[in-house]
Image 1: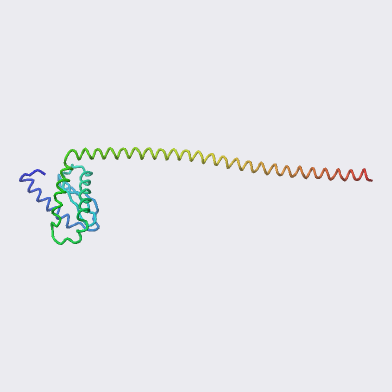
Image 2: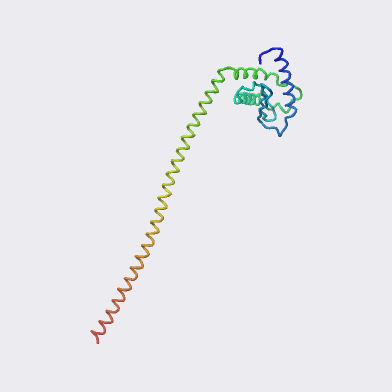
Length: 196
């Protein structure tokens, strides 16, 4: 925010609002949140017991604001994460301000927005790959359904083969019995006419 007398008063008002916000935050508060304050917006992230807060113009992209907070969180945790429970005085980590200022400049800088567009392009590439993978899975699903229909056709053909085999076995049994009966009758006739 550029300096002016009105901005100075507004800044004090926003600082007061930030202090009130810190007093109201607790364990049940959402981990990520945006709170509008007129033409400005507070964005905060709570991670591992530390709250990271930024005040931006309301039109500033939320994705960038939260990206900034996540960068701060990762670096702060790396540098001071283990020391947080032992802190007893305010501004114990004042040296972290240099990282905050450097990171803030990179997010305000237009190159950072270009980097974000590069990230966005990479995400779109990942999305295209995922869509291609999903289409491939769907094609496999179609192949599986075709295989399933062929298996069900094969099952019905095997049932037909089984019933045909039973019919042929029954017919073969009757033919054998008939042949045995004819042989038995011929034997009786032969014995009767030739031996008697």
